[in-house]
Amino acid sequence: MNQEDVKKLETETKIDTLEAVAPSPSLEQQLLLAAAEGDTNEVARLIDLEADVDYQDEEGVSPLMKAAEGGHTTVLAALLQSGAPWNAQDKYGYCAGEYAMGSGHQEAVDLLLDFAVQAELVLGALQRRMQVGSGAAVPNSDYLNQKLVYRGEQLLDAEGEAVMMGWERPLMVRHAELICPGSREADETTAITISAAAGEKDDEEEGEERRPAEGTEPSVAVLAAATAAAAAAAPSSEGGGSGSRTGVQGGQRKDGGRVLNVGFGLGIVDTAIQSYNPVRHTIVEAHPDVYEHMVRQGWAERPGVRILKGRWQDVLPELLAEAPYDGIFFDTYGEYYEEMREFHLHVPHLLARDGVYSFFNGLASDNIFFHMVYCRLISLELASKGLTVEYEPVPVGTLGDEVWQGVRSKYWHFETYFLPRVTHGDPLESVEEEGPGEGEGQGQVEGEGKEKAEEEEGKEVEGPRQATGPVSNAARIRD
Ligand SMILES: C[S@@+](CC[C@H](N)C(=O)[O-])C[C@H]1O[C@@H](n2cnc3c(N)ncnc32)[C@H](O)[C@@H]1O
Image: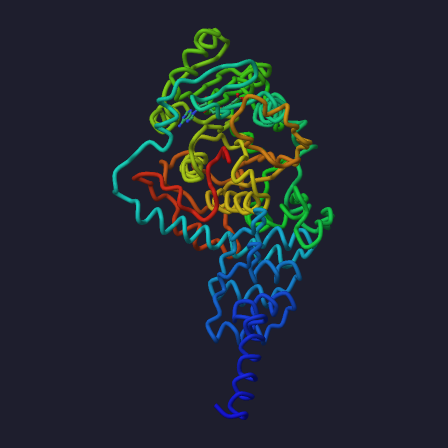
């Protein structure tokens, strides 16, 4: 080796060493940077070069999150169109929607929300199509076969998971107040109409450093925007009331009405319902231990009470025969969005024209953006049945560790609960003469979800429940 060769080798080694110290950024790292800077052309170029849009760095941060944080909507759209998952979470559990919320970019929040709802509608439709005819299975059969324990203000399953807890009392009391005919007047002054609130500004707290704010929650405006399409589509029945039902006068009932509650638990909502003296108070309860508890507590003898033992799915023919109800509340355990959606298919036939339906709104209660996606999804799907949803924000405050003592998992993480109030969209429309599965699509959903929401209406779901949606979709989630 001569002098020149030695020099050449030395130079090459130096370059190699330098490259080892600072390798050129990968396509994905370049994409992350370009997304953060909102560089649309560079993002497009990198996508063309097949940069992986699923990429997440060592902190779990994706190009979509970076674009969301910067409010770069064109980049967001390009990434989503190229398959970037809207629901990926960083190592702290935050998704792109929360990055957008945390930095106050409402347009980016809306774009992500629209896309997420579309994706969930399509995915749900696909899953249902695949499951049709594959044989029915009870989604919460494990739970229904477990021994339950009543311990003070807690109802626990065999693993110590909370089926129901006393901290929910104020929520249950408000749910009862909302659905019971005796208190209808008060409802109309406090319920927030989504469409009316849609223009408000989001005043979220600032997030620490680059991460979205801890406990970031949707303001009424954000949630309002999320549900505006549905709210605008199905005309509100506020102040209307068809007056078609006996006992109704000027929108107010003279008697305590006919009320249905699905899921007894601690009986908090039923106790509150009783305080409005319903003429008929039907309670559906599936768990044998809960049923025995109810009987021991004398619920079978309470005024107007009729207990239907079994899953609501099993006693549905009796419910439909007994319908319409002036007020309905739905709060089961161990079931999924799909079961709630299936119940919602029957609500137009169960609910009186001037009745009020409500449900425990605990879907995806560990991620505020996913929760918003579900609120909107429910609004769209109910709107396609001619039903209008309003969400009333109810402060929950911070639930300290003491609340969760003795319970295996914390299942609620937000400081505000969005209490749903569901009514028939148009008092003049009639669904009473139609059977279940008919008559859907009366309230028009003018929005991107319309076709998909309508496309899947009325399809009976058979087959095992598969919790395979991209969003955790248990109605009462444990983590
Ligand atoms: C969260 S608790 C209801 C709490 C109740 N809202 C209260 O105020 O205490 C859920 C209840 O639904 C019952 N449940 C679960 N799946 C059901 C089903 N498919 N049909 C009827 N009840 C069901 C459970 O056994 C449990 O008692």
